[in-house]
Image (cartoon, rainbow, N blue to C red; front, side, top):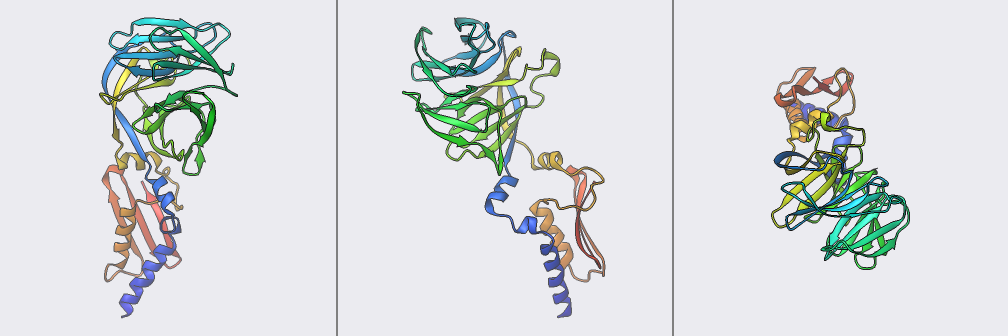
Length: 335
């Protein structure tokens, strides 16, 4: 009986020292297991290295591209296989072109600080009309009915697809953290994909809640030797909904990449977020498997006065250690 009581006390101490794990709400748990994706390159297509890409879209074998910089801004129709620009409309030098999207038989293009959007006929690139909006224009996407507009903040504006009037705003968050610098946008299978400016990451966003439901890490997609200036950053997402193809590129990049996404292994995610060597005892979020194996070590029969329960994780080259000593219980990450 005394042995059973001792085990219960030990288990209680361990649970008590882990409120950050056992006391989490369901939303906190979801945030901890946010899906992260890596990529595989399927095909590489040529891209104009003078194109300061601000918007990208795909339809019927062609890319539509909006480029920026005053005096260089344009709307282009590009043959995917060759990178050849087969149709082009230039903006006035007073405009800095930004994101584009295709809705029905029209192309919509934003400008950065002018507060003016352009509506073109998809086939002829004839300018049909303009519309006004407040603040800056960055990225633009559509689900076929509504438009989603980013402006560099953590909010995405939702516009009516016919009148261009603002209907509401979506605040984008990863857990409790607001995500700003949202740039080029694309609607992909019910989610909004958003480049985060000056990063190699794309956020996968729920258009209903604004929650980030996953991250795509495109680090290593393009070698730094091809980035000829500091602004030659990842910025351009297009999706082929018929063949389920995802295309990405960047400003002044030599290539457009067709990529396939895959979930990053859990071990890789833990390694990326692991505490630094020498961090010592600290409050850390342990994998549930490690936690329960540590519990098992504690309640195993005939443990001594001081118990070390260690579960090794070879892929991480570290161990999760739970130590019960006279002074109490501590959790430690060992490298």
